[in-house]
Amino acid sequence: MQEILTQLNRVRGVGGSLLVSGEGLAMASALRDGTDEAQLSATIGSLIEHSQRLGKHLELGATRHVHAAGDQGGVLLLAAGNGYLVVLIDPAANLALLQLETKPFLERIAQRLAL
Image 1 (cartoon, rainbow, N blue to C red):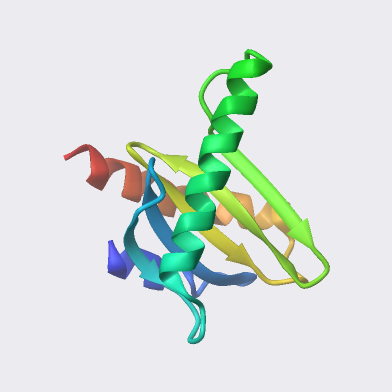
Image 2 (image 1 turned 120 degrees about the vertical axis):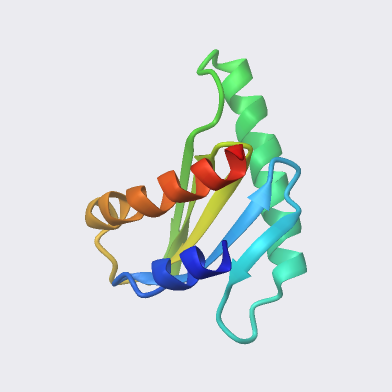
């Protein structure tokens, strides 16, 4: 998994990546120095919980994708089998292109988690 995340980080616009369980526990990470993996994982766990609750309330089904953006960048949360891929996004990234370029990595992760 670490190798996949490291390769993903080479994609233009990616500022780091993290693989978490459905409960928000870190499974693998390739984050920038200074990023607190434990704190980020806990926050992502809360995001997963809230997005699932919102999806249930609105009858949207299982959470597959969440995007949050700010002035200094963003985060993309993508369902990957039994886990979630978290991609930290640089401020100048092209989101549509980034989503296309992360798809093969997401598929590889989901495949490995299914084993």
